[in-house]
View 1 (cartoon, rainbow, N blue to C red):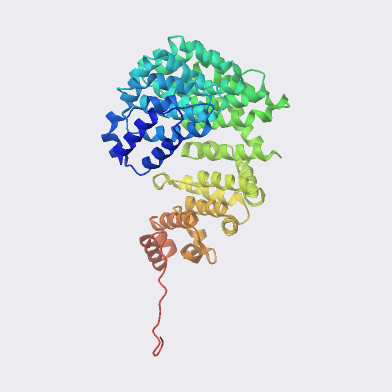
View 2 (tube, helix red, strand yellow):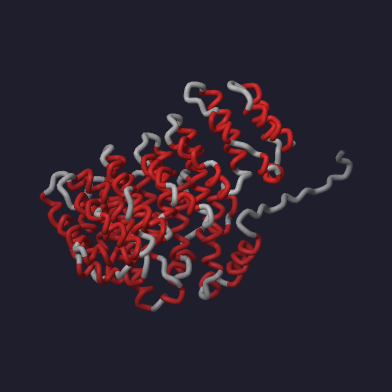
Length: 504
């Protein structure tokens, strides 16, 4: 079969418009294993196929792209880089996006290969074409180009090629295409900066990080909203956070939040700025961040009282992030009755808001209330129990009611809340004393789909693995939980059949 494909490939290379032969070749390739093609790799002459990528003949181009996708997989990346470099350059400037995507997929293979990548680093024209692909209208083409350049920049030689040559001028030139393309370049710069302090240094020296930060703190509110997402990505790394602190960027973001009250357009960027601080707090120290930037905590509390669901959603998400570890929980506890009122609002929203906001509230509650067994001190257990009672008049019944609603995501989110508190003795007592709750947990017939069965199983696992469950639920119920656990999430009880004498 592979030999037949090679024969057809030779036939194709001799013809000017070989549509029939291309169709035949495509058909044959569908049934040839890749291993057989690799054995014939030395015989595969792909140059003629690239030359048939005719912008004026759509079907011929489509067939060639399909065939090349298959055949190129049989060739080693080093071979592609060395022997098809001119074809790759042409592919990146081809007007048909499918050809560009095909070419960039090969560039992607090359940059992943340590032997082949040097071939690209020594090909300035090819690198330039990859950079200019960022400026194309097709997002898939731009994303593939960004991914390849990001991968190239993982090496010292790649960083030098991108930032210490004319390529940097090409990158700046591409940025001038329009706002969308400029943000794509920023995305690339942030990806590269996040790798290491050295990578960040190359990016800052280029001036592009400074330009991004200038736009972040500029007057255009829509630009701010876009830039804060990228700066948040940079802050995920320790060296990124250090740089932002040293440059005074975190203080500037805090000052913009302070001034947001007098800005009629603050709703465009405020959610992103608050998310930034939420992520910063959980990656560093919730206590330090909240003490140094009290306006952040103030704004989060304020946003929960907003009439705007977007603001409420961001505030709820941030509370969930902040309270996901013990230090964050203690920071929230220090706000006293104010936090109790906030919990009451979250409980209200979990019951009355839109489905999407209900789910976000339930996720935040799960995050707030989970305590790992090794951190369950008497003080912290009293705290979570007190918080739980602040959510509503009968929180357990509230979440049980939500879990019975015919919406899969809501059902699973409510089960996740039960799972979060399931290893805490006070919650186990509440569950045991709630009429029908233990039966609800054991009842498999309530769950009809895989996600629900998985969520219920996690709840059973959390209960069954708790050291206090046998004492609180009693031994018979504890054994039922262990049986459920050993049977797995998808167990179906066999239906017994009784033989009737004389039945056929």
